[in-house]
Image 1 (spheres, rainbow, N blue to C red):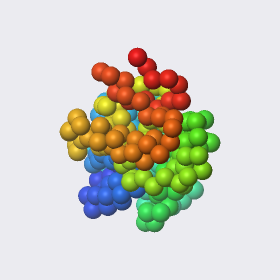
Image 2 (cartoon, rainbow, N blue to C red):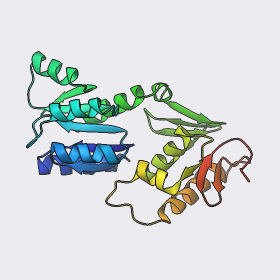
Image 3 (spheres, rainbow, N blue to C red):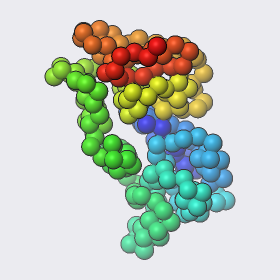
Image 4 (spheres, rainbow, N blue to C red):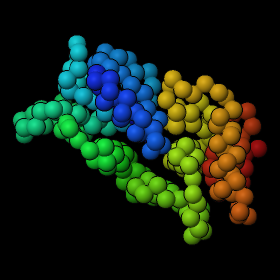
Length: 228
């Protein structure tokens, strides 16, 4: 999952970025409303964490501008204001959920998982499947033919990216955009390394190989015969 955090408090934004990355999210930061709009117009994000109190252009205006541009990315709004009227204003601006500061990081994670599950019909089921391979987006548990598969956070994120688009060929850039933030991903062979690790864990112990290389394009996960 690729998340944009829009927060002008440097310590808080750094804390959230570090914590989410440890959970396997890719995270980019914006510190004001204008930068947030620029990010959202040029990059695809799975979710946006948006503070209301921002310099220049506040979070409510950012939220309204995103919706006016038909950017439907789920938005979790952060605020220090804790009245019903404040929450209503935020939701009416187009936010999907509302979290009051100070908050526990575990609650933020739970809210993001809930937003992720609601964003598409596929996500609502929480379980992605390809053949006998299953990935539960709520518990991060991966199994194949009933056997639990232990994956590192980035391995899980790459596999989730493939499984959400099963049978579709994804370029290395498309996978990287989902798993890494813009500022840190700069090596073309990183995806190949993670695919190799996933094959060792997900495919090698089984007869049917699900993770396929499409020469000159990228990778896909499928039960179907490999593409020529």
